[in-house]
Length: 228
Ligand code: C5P
Image 1 (cartoon, helix red, strand yellow):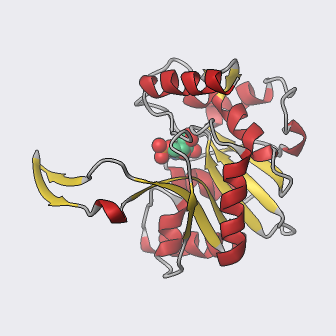
Image 2 (cartoon, protein in one colour):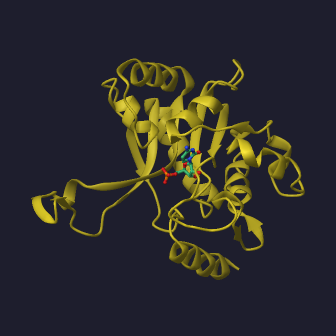
Image 3 (tube, rainbow, N blue to C red):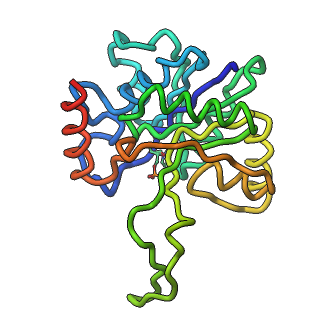
């Protein structure tokens, strides 16, 4: 399996509210985007890693020391766009024709581990499309104007994580359909689902959390320290 990885780091991180872009916040002394790259690079199947950064931060990225694990797999960083889907499109456009698979990962998930990547790669190799997900622990409510309108069946609810892994041709077709329909999704699987193609679920880990709020980074630091 020959895989390219897109590391999406072009979000503004407005909810976090830090003075530096979220991808450059530090976890264990390294930027989140570097931590995400290290986890992906630990897998031999992943041959090439494309960071997708805000256009305004490309110079900051290029100035960063490349003395981390996996740096030799790095491709030139590309500028992302306004929506996550735009950033993914920009990364996807740079992939060479000799690779068959793409793993799309949030830079905001720096605690990813190589064995989790292995599980989602295996699931995708069997089926063509897969993501990491965890069963939801809370009961989810649909709420409108402060009132509950529905309760989702918890036994059927999962929280999608990344990486999400696809045959590149499949993700390109899914993106083309979304673009033609003017549809914007919040993850890649949603675009593939719209083609009517099933997406397999591989076992994720709650520790592969997405850093959105400052308290998420505190939790991530605690998990990082515990790893030793
Ligand atoms: O905003 P959201 O939680 O969906 O962000 C998930 C990941 O997607 C983050 O790592 C963020 O940097 C990235 N993203 C992006 N381009 C955007 C918005 C989000 O690369 N326009």
